[in-house]
Length: 323
Image 1 (cartoon, rainbow, N blue to C red):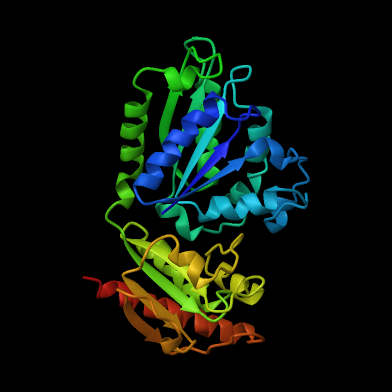
Image 2 (tube, rainbow, N blue to C red):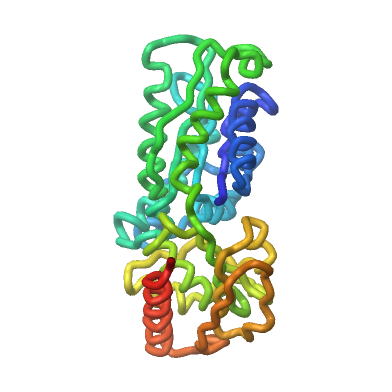
């Protein structure tokens, strides 16, 4: 399980940072791999409405968002954390969210489905100095539409009024218990999932396709990991195109090593595709080998389609016999 925190406050180690840190610590205690993106120093440009995303599904602005897109797609849980500035989130965090028009365009304009859509969850964490009735209303609405574009189910918010001075959040009575209860509810759907790790040589094609199909079909029962023995520089564009033809969105993925994936937890099954099965040793995991072409580089579009459909059939059969 991968939990991502978006720290939207420009203040270092302030009340927002403290609240987010408490939540991520709870996730870590539950066995999740956690990561924080500190938005202010990332210097993310605001959306300039070039509309390129609606035509080709990406953003031409070359800045820190390129790495953020991949992190958002990888995450099982996304926590948006911000103080209230003029009754909404900070401008830095709003710029990041606006740039996620890319996800909206891929979903609604290009009609592509993210394989992780079925199990991704999101929540808002916010603090404010005043106590107005509608203090968090705008942040809540912004979060709802952000999570819709991200294909994440919005699980609500944890908010605090009257938090003005440094240290107020740490001194707030009951905050640790409230965070514990909030995160327990948020993470509960992931607790019973077992893990499967798909491995190929470069994690650029075969294991990516298998992982995407397993994620889209059984993300509620399986935590799906993929990795490579010798990770490539980027995923195979021919594979991305072949998957897009059947409506599966493989954008913003990047090859990872098997060791990186294992850092998220020991799998129950390791499935090797193409590469020699004996090259993959994971203690405690059941090993399965699928005999498919080891290197689909330079494969014709029709050949890639045949390979795609073969891998899908193998994933379906694997899921059918799961105990």
